[in-house]
Image (cartoon, rainbow, N blue to C red):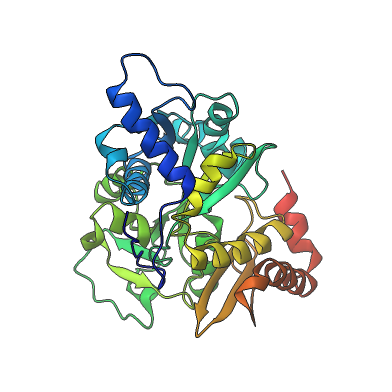
Length: 357
């Protein structure tokens, strides 16, 4: 099989031995009268049932089967939708019901007990400390990491340099993210915030129905759903620092499943791995949770990894931002070091407020 070039790598890449073995097994299965021996096919890919999650899962499978079309033609992979507590409970903030891990809890239970073989996640929704026996085996090329401001009144004039000026005094913002809330309040303390959760279309429908004056969504999700035309303002990182892992899809597997980990190494994006490692290290060191206004955003420019970190009070009256630069291979240490600096320069009462029930 000829070497293929991925968009994020310059060198030709050959399918891994593990990928070739799965392909061979798919061919044997298609011709065998008896069930084949070895790994059972199809391999089951677990995902949340939301439209965005399913689009991301299907994009992952497309990328995986691009190496060897026989995997697609022989049905070597099967989508497995899982309802999560984070999706079922839309009436409360995630911090009140257990945190972002509720988007992965049931999925990882299915992975541990063998009902699925892979699990596909939006990396920003994946807890930093994974359950025992589960590893982040693969990160895919990052989509745009920026946040987008969505307005109910789309006739207003927007100044990209001062995007929040388009909001009327005391405007109600539909939002479930304390990171977004804190950064907006730091600039516009007059704004009001109300809980708005649900999948992308649900939030847009509620906005259109008048539940709020504006909301914020990840630009990556809107692009993946083909809904970028609904964006009114793209917020630059210096206006709204993204969440750690935003725009990156991560794939988890059982730690003991070395063959699947080898298979996934064929589609790993090295840049996504480096920047997500830095961002997740920063988040983990700050004990980041859904009640913690923390931002983390890394990028690689001219071979240098640049990591920006932010911590704030929920009401936006305190906001601290710092940046660090270094080599991509040193991503984990950089995340930890920047977190230590942010913690050192943040008043202790900020962390006490974050941990208060």
